[in-house]
Every structure is written in C-alpha cells, then in structure tokens.
Figure 1: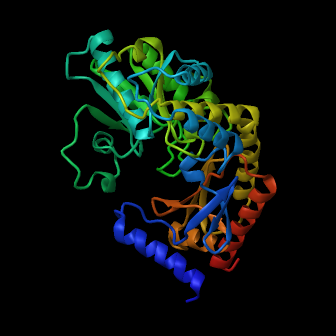
Figure 2: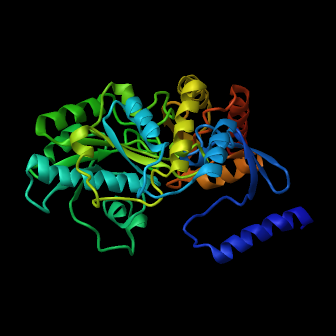
Figure 3: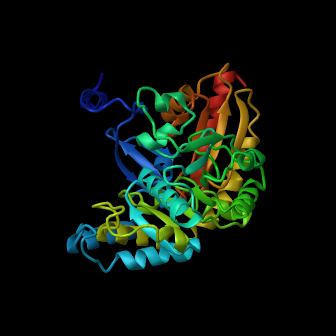
Length: 408
C-alpha cells in the first residue's frame, strides 16, 4: 500500500470508528470539488453524477453562491427568528413568486419542511375544514421517501426505515403510488391532505402515469383536501421545469422544498403554501433557531437567482432528454428499465447480472461517481451545470462498464 492509498484508507477508518454507520458510502475520500467534478486526496478526478441527492444542482463551489455566503457571513449569520433581518423577506418573496403560492415557513432540512407541512395540514383540517380534533388523516403513497424523522418513517412502506423505531404516530394511510382512483377511494371526511412526491426519488426515480397529478388536483378540489407535494429532490430545475408538477400544469396547495435551495453549501428548506394554509402558524406554534437565518436567506436567494440567470432549468430539460436517449440506446442485458425526467434518471440493473452497488463501484474506478438505491437502481443526477461533453464521457464509461460485465 503506497502512502497516498494509506492516507485514504486512514480517513475511511477514522470515520468508520467514530461515525454512526447509518450510511454505506463508496470507498472514496473526496477532498475538493468544483462544478460537476470532485477530487480525492490523491488528486484523482471524478465526475459527480449524483449531485448530493440534488442538493448541488448549481454545482460545487459556485462563485456567485460562495460570494453571497462569505459576504453575509462577514456581516451577520444567525440571529434566530427573535429579530428581523433584511434578507429573509426578499428571499421568501422570490420563492413565493416563483411557486405561485402565498407564504412560506423557512426551515433547514427537507425532513423539517415535510414535518412543517404535516403540522400545517392538520391544523388546517381542524380550524378550516372542521375535522374532529385529533382525527385528521393524511394520505401518502407506497414507496414514499419524505425524510428520516420518527413521524415520517412511521408512514414509510420500507421495512428498513421503520425497524426498531416505533411506536409511530397515527394519522397516515398508505395508498398505491400512481393510482389516482385508489387515492380518491381512500379519502374520508377526516382526510386533511394528500402528500406525495411528483416523482419518487429514493424509490428509484419512479415516474407516475401521465395525468396522475392532474387527477390528484381534481380529487383534492372535489373533496376539500389539500394537495401537498414534496419537491425536495425533484424541484428547482432537476426535471427540466422549475418544479416537477409543472409538467402537468397544476399548482399544489403546499410545496416542500430543500436540498438545492441551499446552493450546495448549507441546509436551507421551506414549506410554501397558499394563504389559508400558511396562516395556520402563529407565534409559538412552530419554529427553528437556524431556519430563515440571514445566512440561509442570502444563500437561498443566490441559489434561486443562479438557477434562473444561468438558464439551468432549460439546460436540465435539454441535457436530460439527451441523457435519456443515450441510456435507452444502450443495448445491454444488464439494463431492465430506464426511467426519469430531466437530469434525473434511474437505470434498473438486472440482479442476475450484477448488483447496482457493484456497478457503482466499477464506475468509481472509471472516474464516475453515483450511488445505488434499493439494490437494483443506479441514479444519474449530475449538477445542472454539467457540460454535455462531460455528460457524454460519463455515459460512455457506463456503457463500457456494462459491456465488460456482460461481455457484450
């Protein structure tokens, strides 16, 4: 083992010794990143085809976002919401105008945005719809992933997310994803909201049938139920629109946002909603010390402006169509399905050929970094700033890897 390899091995060993083993990362130690590229401690370069689960849509170390971060940090970073700042209002105004909704509650992580949505929906059900106290119910989709808090994993359909963490909060019912008829049939007078991802990310980039979201919008209108969409991964340009629900021309009653909202440098999230929903929060009803800080607001605004000014939404649409075409053209027995939208694609790998983890490890050796989900799906979701030539380079490496696996 040479000195450089030893340094990487030591870094992995120290992390493994002291960090909870709640992730299973690939054996690579990233020490620097810029744009769509990352480098390990040996100076080897890797193309990022994952973008930190869509948190790095604007690329690593974007100069405009770093400038906003450092300028604001040098002035004032965190004051809690006990005082006003000159940054929060402009940030949330930009976000609300972008979504077409009326108000927002700033938080930090995506899971916090979802928890905020749950609280708002329940209080709306009691105070506006007239549901009996403590009886409100929220309908969710099979295969969902909305975060890791105990409330959220309680309505997951994935056993590994739930095992050993109960008892769980009541008030949720799981319905088949993509089946609007089943969702309508599950509605009762106590139903407060339907909470779904427009495209399921952690489940393997699962795209529902065309018209599914339009059907849900109509169903919610007909039954006086809130439609809340979790666009923490799918939002902010990832699918070729600002938000994935725009592919069907609808507007939700509430929207959970995060990840890319932090510009790849810090956690920033928000629950954005129509006026009668966001007004369910009054002083003391909800809060976060760091949520909506001057630093978070400055970074969030810079992230939104960067996506808009650099045309990254259109870039995602164009490069995403190219990526889908290229992936679907790969003639390999290892691939059983290719699905996605924009620069967000899941490739299903036949487990009889290889595990998705093994393919990701082989790609790492080729200088391409991604990560599997559910053992059989490889996710391709590069930063939206990626160059077409670099994207093609990664797709060439992928095709070559599959060819060597299958001798074709």
